[in-house]
Length: 411
Image (cartoon, rainbow, N blue to C red; front, top):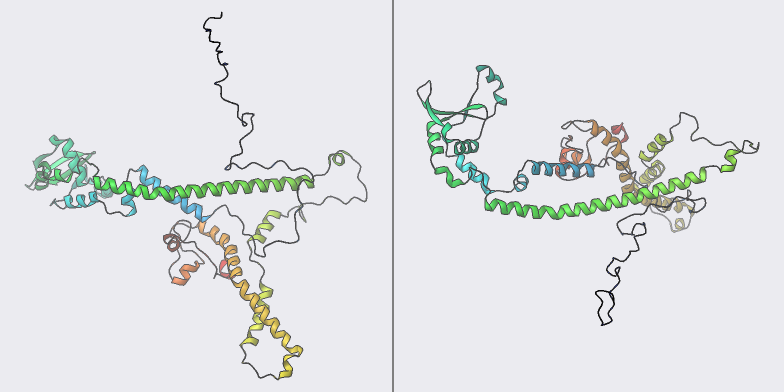
């Protein structure tokens, strides 16, 4: 009998019974998660639908994607401001404008001192650089007196007054005798500011501020992830179309290797009319100019004076004559002009915005923006640069637009 076996007939379970079962994703393939975007397979000849170059579903122009968006720049600058407050160990509630208790107690404590803090330079030649000399606050003086009580002693000044002088952070500081007595007494201990200890009220305010900020930050993270996911998906689709076009444009391998070329075969076309032609620059210029609306505007302008004339009395026979057809044509043109007014304004603003934004990036903070944005024009205020937009639009969390600007002002 095998050692350890009993007469009950029980069989030990196999050693691999407790092993983890093999997942379907253990074969080296990546699981199909909803948040992960698969890259399109490499295109093959004739596997994709042909591109329709003749028509489009929407008559409106597709806006050109810009890599210097103001929204991302403003968000990154705002996040940097919050990170700066956290790295300096400052209060977010105080920087956002909350009324805390500690600053009020500090102002009340500073009002008890009668004199001022005087910094004595080491030599008279340092008076010209007095603005760069370190000058402590009353709270720092109180904290220094608590940690170095033996360094604060009264001495006789040259004018006969008794003052207290001590060296603090490599500078000589002088305070009056009355202020020295106030510091050495236990009167200031009731403020609980030196050494600095956070107050319970301020900690509750800071905690509530963090709760308020967490929700929009989480929403911002979700929006940023969605933008990144959709942008990656668009990039994959753009790469797939580019690869498909390149595969169709590449000549067959058999023709590449053969040196014979038929006389009837047309020569290969070059990328442009001449070697110095830049197709990308030409396309960017076409994408950024406003949509052609001159023909529609001229036809509509010609019809406006006829509509503004006073109505004339017409005979009943004139209602069936062909002379009434031009008026209906004018009415149709006017209706089409009104329908395209809002669309043309958006196209003009979208066309002028990249050109004006390129000028704004070269300006320094506080320089005037020319031409001014629509908001500054309407309010008749000065349009000056703040971060990536004008000062007024940045404060109102708005976006600068130039719908009312003309081509002459942009030029």
